[in-house]
Structures are given as C-alpha cells and as structure tokens.
Amino acid sequence: MKNMAKELAELQRMGPVQLRAKHLEVFGQPTRTGNKAYLVKRIGWRLQMLAEGDLSQRAQRRAAELANDADIRMTVPKSPPPLLRASGTVVAGRLPGSTAVPMPGTVLARNYKGKTVQVTVLADGFDHEGTVYKSLSAVAQAVTGCHWNGHLFFGLRNGGKP
Image 1 (tube, helix red, strand yellow):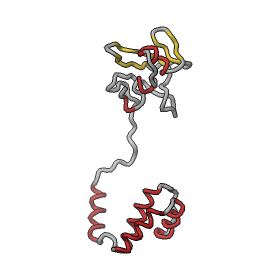
Image 2 (image 1 turned 135 degrees about the vertical axis):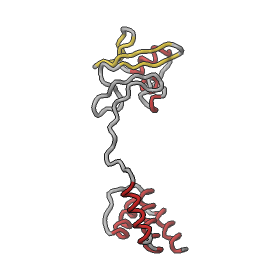
Image 3 (image 1 turned 90 degrees about the vertical axis):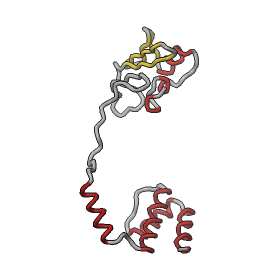
Image 4 (image 1 turned 120 degrees about the vertical axis):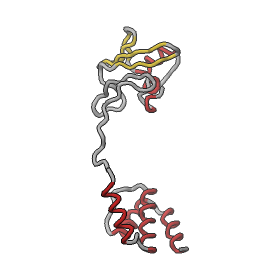
C-alpha cells in the first residue's frame, strides 16, 4: 500500500504531458485531454485497480442489471428560451451562437427601486423611454446614475439575478 501512495504522490508532481504519456502506458491508448486533475484521478484509479483487482464478476453483473433497469436520458433535453426569470427580466430569445445579446425586438424588464425599467433590444442599440443607447451599460447608468454592467443589471448573467 505504501508503494501505491508513492505512485499517487508522483502523479501529483507530473505535468500534463507526462500524465498523458502515463495514461498511454497504463491504459494502452492515448487520451485527448490535458486536464491534470482528471488525468491524476483516472490514472490513480487504474493503478489501484491493477494493483488490488477490479470489481468481482458478481458486482459487475449487478451493476449491468441496474444500468439496464435505469431510465437514462440518451439526449440532452431541449430547453425553450426563458420568457420570465425570477428577477423580472423578460428574455424572448437570443441571437444564434450568442450568449450575451438577446435578439432584436426582445423586451428586457427589471424592477429598480420600485419602478419597472423596460428596454427594447434594437438591431443597433437599446431603446429606453424613447432614447436609443449603444449598450445596456449605458441604459443602466442612465437609470441608476452610476456605472453598472448592463448584462448584470438586467439579469442576463448570474442565472437571471440582477
């Protein structure tokens, strides 16, 4: 067991390139990842399994039975764009491939000091009470009087919490 502890400590000192070579040595196939923490855990598990043995045949059969009986999702669920978040931010959709700016026509709303602040997303800016601003930060600054990150102010980051 001391030898195993020594090997695990040695893995911690290795760099990603050395860990990838060790992975090839231990598993017999290369890995595409360079994530050090993952490689240390995976190689450590394999070394322990080789030294102390794998699960018994009975345990492997039982695990396979449980896996066959489990309701396992095979695809990622499609989630529609959220319409109303807990913060009061209304988001109708986002531009394809963009996580930052909602699609033009989207109305963002946020309660600030008892007043509802509404902004309509335009193709070239943001409309707030008839004035077009270049950024959400500019709208947030006009409303609050101090600098804000517009995406945070309107709840487009941090899970909808302004």
